[in-house]
Length: 97
Image (cartoon, rainbow, N blue to C red; front, side, top):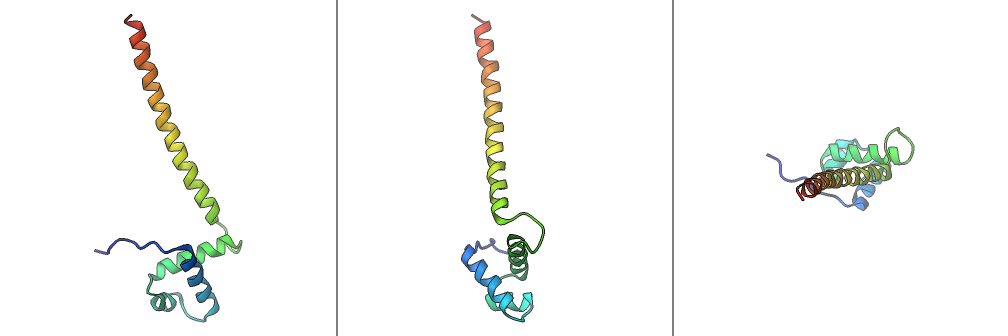
């Protein structure tokens, strides 16, 4: 069973992509030299191409904004549910007086 997935800093990812693009090496060979998984390097290259407009897809900034908006949406839904329950509770309390 593999261990936890390491989180590489953005600078490392950019440098890995730059090294790959400036070499004539295959992705698996470059990934081996960098001691990373070839699929990680493949994803970083794909994302770089999207960010540079060379490929269709969500840019890094768009992905970050989407994640932020999803978290915010989840929080707002939870708050709305809480307020609904509180309104029902207080309506019952008011009705018993």
